[in-house]
Picture 1 (cartoon, rainbow, N blue to C red):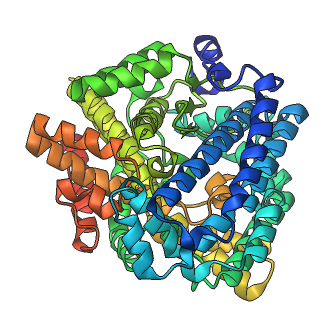
Picture 2 (picture 1 turned 180 degrees about the vertical axis):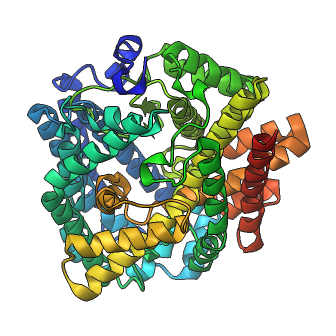
Length: 595
C-alpha cells in the first residue's frame, strides 16, 4: 500500500498507554487527596521561610528532602494531566483538567521558591562548605547548580508574581498552538498533520508535491493566529530576559543546559562551517533520483524502491529490541517493559498532538513514550530515539527527582545513541547494495536533520528573537525571510526552496514550547558520534560505562558525567570529530552509489 493511503490504525490501535500506574482516571479520588496533601505540605514547608541561612547540614537535608517529595508528587500529577491531554487536545474536559494542574503546580512553585532564593543569597564559602559536606553530598550538585542563577533572580515578591502568572504566559500559548495544529485538517481527505507529513517521505514525487501543497495551504489558513502565538512567545521571553538581566536571548537556555556560551558558540560555528556537506550530499541525491533539480519536497524522498514497503508495529518493535539487546541485554529488558506494560501510545488519532516524546513523569513512577506511528523507516528510528530517552529516564530515577533530570544537551545522548544502534543493526543485516545505499542515505538525512537543520533553526531563532527585541512585533514576511535565509545558508544551491516553504517555520513546536532548545539536538548527535566511535574501539568494556552514565542522570556537571569517556566539551575541536564521522557517512554513500 502506498504511503498516501496508509495509516497504521489497525496494527497500532491497541498500542495505547495505561496511565493507571499514575491515576485510574481524571476523576480518581486520589487526585483530590494528592492535591490536598500538596497544599498542606506546602503550607507546612513555609515554616522554613527566613531560616534557610541558619540551617545546619541536618536540618538543610531534611528541608531538601521535604521539598523534593512535594515536587515529586506535584510533577506526577502534572505529568498525568499532560499525558491525558496530549492524546485528546480537542477535548475541553481534558484541556481544563490539564490547565487546573498547571495552575496547581504554579502555586507550589510560587509558595516554595523562597527556599531557592534564600539559598542563593548565602555567601559562596558557606554554600560550598554545606554542599560538599558528607550529609549533603547527594544533593551537592543540585545545591550548587541552583546558585548559577544567582545574578538573574529577582526579589521574592517579584518571583512570586512571575510564578503566579506562568500558567497564563508562554505555556498557555503553547497549549493553544498544540490544539490548533491537532485540530487542523489538510487537503480534500481532511488528514491530520502526522498523516500528511508521512507523504513527504513517499517514493512518488507527485504524492510529495501534493503533500507540500496541502501542508502549506493548511498552515496558511491559520498563519495569522500562529504568527500571533509566535510573537507573543518571543515577547514573553524578551520581557523575562530583560527582568532577569540575561545578556542575550540564548543565555537562559545555556545556563539551564549547564553549557558555556563559548561552548555553544563553538558548536554552532563548527556546524555552520560544514554546510558544504549538506550541499555535497543533496547533489549526490539528485543524481541518485535522476532529477535535474531537487525541490524542498524532494529532501526526504527515498533513493530506493524498498522504501515503499511499510514496517508493521511488530516488526518495528523487534528491530529496535534486537538492536538494543545486541548492545546490552539490560537495556533490552527495560525497553521490553515499555511494550509489555503499556508505557507507549502509538496510533495516529484525531485530536492527538503531533510529534513524539518520552516523558519522565517522576522517579516514583516510570516514563511514558508518545508516538505517531505510520510504519515508515523513519518511524522505526523515532521509536528507537524515544525508547533511548525512556531507558535513560528509567535508569536515572534512582537518583531522585532533583538529581535525575539532565541538561538538554546530555538528555539527547541516549536517544541518538539508540538510533545509531538500530541503524548499524539494520545495515549489518542488509545484503542488497540498493537497499544498503538507501539505508545510508536515510541515516545521513537523519544526521543532517539533527545537526545541520537544528543549527540552521538556531540561526533562525536568533534572527527572530533579536528582531522582536529591536523591531517590535514581527510580520509574517520578516519571519518568512529569516526562515528562508537561514535554510538557504544550509542548502546552498543543492535544493530549491519554493515559495510555499516560506511558512514552514510555523508548525515546528520547539519554537513555541522550548525557545533555544534546538541546538541540543546537534550537541547530542555529535557527542554520540564520538561515543559510538569509542564503543566500536572498546567493545563490551564500553557498555558498563555507558549504563553508569545513563544511571547517573544529572547528579554532576555534563563534563564530569562524560569524564570516563575522555570527552572534553571545552575543546572546540571536539565538534570537528563528530562532523568528520558524518563526512565519512557521506563518503560511504558516495562509494555505494558508484558500485
